[in-house]
Amino acid sequence: MTDVLPQPDCSLKAVCEPLELEEPGSKRPPNTGARLWGRVRSKLLRQKLDPQTVETKNWHTDVIEMNGIKVEFSMKFTSRDMSLKRTPSKKQTGVFGVKISVVTKRERSKVPYIVRQCVEEVEKRGIEEVGIYRISGVATDIQALKAVFDANNKDILLMLSDMDINAIAGTLKLYFRELPEPLLTDRLYPAFMEGIALSDPAAKENCMMHLLRSLPDPNLITFLFLLEHLKRVAEKEPINKMSLHNLATVFGPTLLRPSEVESKAHLTSAADIWSHDVMAQVQVLLYYLQHPPISFAELKRNTLYFSTDV
Image (cartoon, rainbow, N blue to C red; front, side):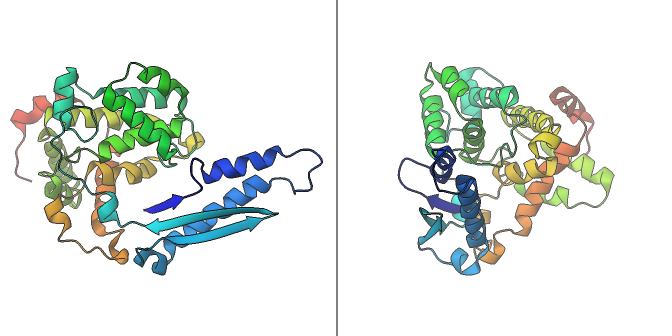
């Protein structure tokens, strides 16, 4: 994960976009803003892949200049262990950082309100947005939405309708990332890793369905709800460029991660960032995304007839 800090209260894109609005008599070549923005993004990607940048913990400052316009930015690499770290929370108010069972019980709902509203808004006006869930929203917008949901503000719906759709998608991802425990739980993590590695299709099917049955009801219902939403997003792949695999790559490591104890057993070097575990997490979600529709009622109905012998 790379943190980029442009000038305060603005984004790099915001800096570049107004450059397209120059007066007709301007001597600046056309498309300066778009080209400069493209150059900044290219520079960032190269920095992400630079082993020396990855291994240092210091901020790296760089300047990109084009046609008299200069963009200065700072960047620092944050290891996956730190950026995806969950910290235990005793918080019982709000929704971020609160156990999903506590939130659904308080709301008397099956799926947290924040999940339902973000999904509804994405499906209403963002399902055809190119790179939806992959492209990050503005951090300040996401934090504003987080504060509104935590306070259960009466203006939530109005704010959602006016907010950039990538910020709403980012808020949904942040909610799952800040759960005290991953949606698919710490307890079942080793079993998911073992199940996805099974080579026999029938054994894998039995194991993966059994693991879903083993989830607490609020986790399972929310997971199935999210699953169907992501499938609908992927149906628009020709437009939004988000395939099932792309969506699994975005959400897999957020919904399924090792516990704090297991994480300490893993290497933290740059070479291990994209570890086997991360790929397996992606494959677990991809398995369920590619699976025919899964019914909560059917899963529970089959519990009595399931054999744990795999």
